[in-house]
Length: 322
Image (tube, rainbow, N blue to C red; front, side, top):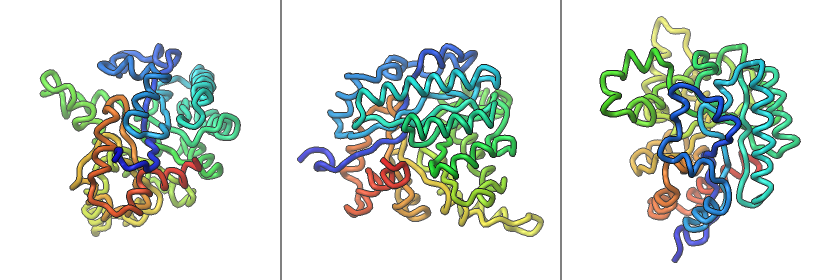
């Protein structure tokens, strides 16, 4: 019996690098990719072989962090648009194997909204991925960025909120005592989760979900801890002295989560109980995580076949219209 016994597998947080984007990266961002740089830059036969070897039918490609979020408002839109054109060319070589999330230069919100529309309508992208803070400073829930949310709702495509290198002042204040010995603490070990979970909470509190009730947001890494903390967050935000917000209801109605880089039985059980199988999608986080452990984990996961099919492909097919 092969891994997953012939089930269709769509992995939706799978990264690549575009040379024209990465040459704009400076400082700590210039080191991003590190030990997997070659794999990030390879979007051809070797990637397809790894997919075949691990029973992965489709990768949804997204540019690695910080993608368009560090691009300036003047030059960024053209750089992002050209990268999206090249991503379409990559997908066109393997149309049954690759789909794409658009890169957006969010420093120019109206232009980013227009690029999202062009990418979806003309290039066949299935949504967009936003990495971290715009300009390294601004959270995406700020009202200046709401045109992007409005356009995503109008196009009926999701926005995937993804980590990037965290705010420098936060890194220095909270983590710098240990990052020399454990540099991973500032990224996937804690920093990424800390900042991206904050982004998710801020989106709920901002009012953008009420303004655009058809909006869909994706968080990777099994929801960046928010499903595990949801009960306590909901309690705290509704205690006396708070304005009150239906945090749990809003989160579970608008957010979807993926398994990227998080193949844990207990964590998945919590997410199933809090989110339901209809809001969880399979992802690997390739090449930061190798392709092989994800399908093996899903094969042995104690889960009924209907829910397993939803997570492996059905939910992505519905949300991303694949």
